[in-house]
Length: 150
Ligand SMILES: CCCCC/C=C\C/C=C\C/C=C\C/C=C\CCCC(=O)SCCNC(=O)CCNC(=O)[C@H](O)C(C)(C)COP(=O)(O)OP(=O)(O)OC[C@H]1O[C@@H](n2cnc3c(N)ncnc32)[C@H](O)[C@@H]1OP(=O)(O)O
Image 1 (cartoon, rainbow, N blue to C red):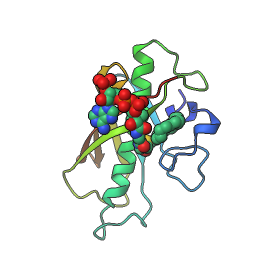
Image 2 (cartoon, rainbow, N blue to C red):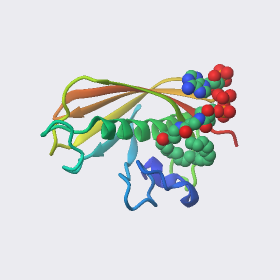
Image 3 (spheres, rainbow, N blue to C red):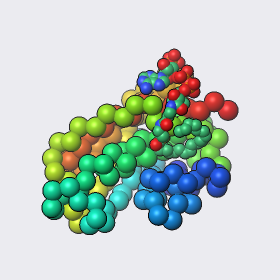
């Protein structure tokens, strides 16, 4: 299966966090795994907060893009839209993002971000997220993504 972000049409794929057409961005990739979504990302050393730990702004960026991709994927699944089709018909943007930083996020490790659908209410899609390093939860987040009008 393709990454959700690789289903965004080319003219809307320039997001700094996840756009496949932004060569200087993070190019986060999010996949559906069973009932969850998952992204994996190993930050470059330049994203330093306290030496040895990852900058919280990067963590927010990863949760932001993981969340919007997850929201689009969960909305497609709810509507039985094939996630293998090019040009995803459902697009979401972030209205609200809450993050709890639970532990310093170590550098040099692969970060695993997982998302679970919390609720779909009309155009509002809420997703709960965790970010772990070496199996330790370093941050949790909740996003409210809004499905854009056609
Ligand atoms: C970001 C630009 C938006 C325009 C985009 C146009 C085309 C782009 C297409 C696709 C995007 C492609 C890729 C994006 C992928 C990843 C990006 C990563 C994530 C981001 O980095 S993205 C940037 C940061 N993001 C923003 O820049 C959003 C600025 N904002 C707005 O563009 C509007 O604000 C919008 C669209 C959110 C809603 O506007 P709207 O007119 O469509 O809908 P409306 O206001 O009626 O809200 C509908 C229901 O959501 C409730 N609601 C709204 N906001 C709420 C809040 N904050 N808290 C609690 N509830 C809220 C209302 O209360 C109502 O609830 P109810 O239906 O129950 O009454």
